[in-house]
Amino acid sequence: MTQKILITGSSAGFGTLTTEHLLKARHRVAASMREPRGRNAGVAERLEKAGAMIATIDVTDDASVEQGVAAAIDALGGLDVVINNAGLGVTGLAESFTPEDFRRLFDINVFGVQRMIRATAPVFRAQRSGLFIHVSSLLGRMTMPFYGPYCASKWALEALAENYRTELSAFGIETAIVEPGGFATTFMDNLMRPSDRSRESEYGELAGAPEAALRGFHELLANSPAQDPQNVRAPSSTWSSGPRANDRCARSSTRSAWATRSRHTTSSFMH
Image (cartoon, rainbow, N blue to C red; front, side, top):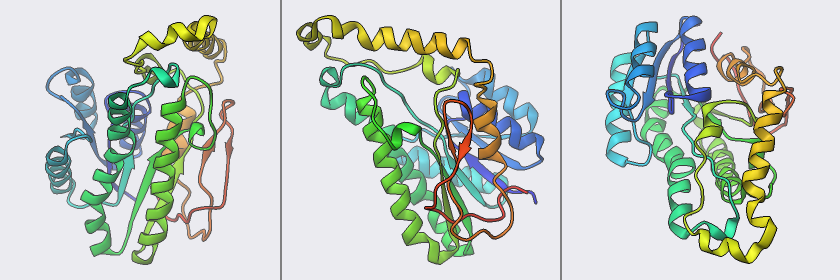
């Protein structure tokens, strides 16, 4: 069944891949991003030619979210699914990240999701149906050195999603969390670094560990062709159909295997 879908962060990575796959499956898609007529003009034009409606949404800006969501719903003629995909990654020693660094990160990874939910939940509630898909990370269930702020933001995202799942389920609104492992996308090329590097001198040799670990991770991905980001795109864009009460949320390991866990109910998504 054709679905009307709004996805954030469509300008790169999983966002672009998922948008392209949804369009090939003949769904109606509003692909949102910042600056679609500026720095993201190339990908916006490509997605638009493929059939997407391009929405300008900066998830850190209340007015941008409200206006972009309204434009997307108007263009799509309604809304069935919201995929909260926009996100920012970081790497570095946790102490070197300033409070402002944390605010910037959480404004995208947590408050951005909250803004999107607040802008779209009334539509879902009125029609007594809808699905939120939140793109989290395996680091939303564990911690890893040099990614502390990112882990914290994804833990917060998952807590928020779990809470909304409970409060909105009575309205027929469903929730799923996707937890990818590491994949070779542009996301890994645009990680935020800490602003206060002066504290790194206190850590001795450990100060260089975050960048060394990142280089090693890139080498690992380069030598793991089976670790294909398409393996994340496909499950998040072809959620299983049919009523499956107490179904489980999808999770991708670093070997692209999808495990499950009993925290969510999902049904009739994109088939």
